Length: 196
Image 1 (cartoon, rainbow, N blue to C red):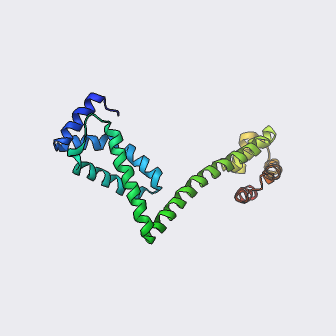
Image 2: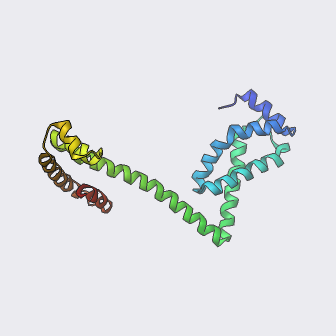
Image 3: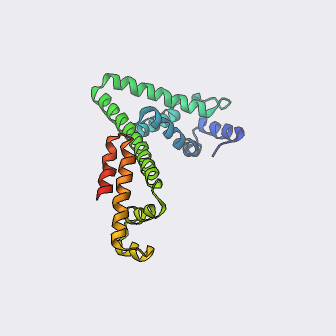
């Protein structure tokens, strides 16, 4: 929700006059956007939350210095950025905090990387499945992906259990051959899935 210039001017003027309701309105309007920005900067939900609270505390204590004619958003984000600089300066002196920031940033990075890698692997597997002949692909999808029983698939496709088994063996072999081209260690998990 964005404020019009007129509304923002009015609310900021009320904040300058120590109006608690105006402060609450501005917090509701800007806190989630600001939190997202802080998380990007410090790579930690916990520290970003602390910096967010410090930012609004400073906003309240410095409310008399606010110029309602200037952009409130810029003013608020500048306070937040200064708090981030202070946070990193403190971290440079505090070895425990420094270690915690590095650990948090690494976990954040790993989480993003793992999500991308999982999606990439799923796509690679799906591409390999799509290369199978129609009937073989259909059998493979039903048994391996949808986890249906041989009896179910036999009744559904009107084929024998031995034919299903033949399709699964050949499909697994074909998919494994296609996946070998990618030389990705994590694909061993897919190989296990295919051979089970």
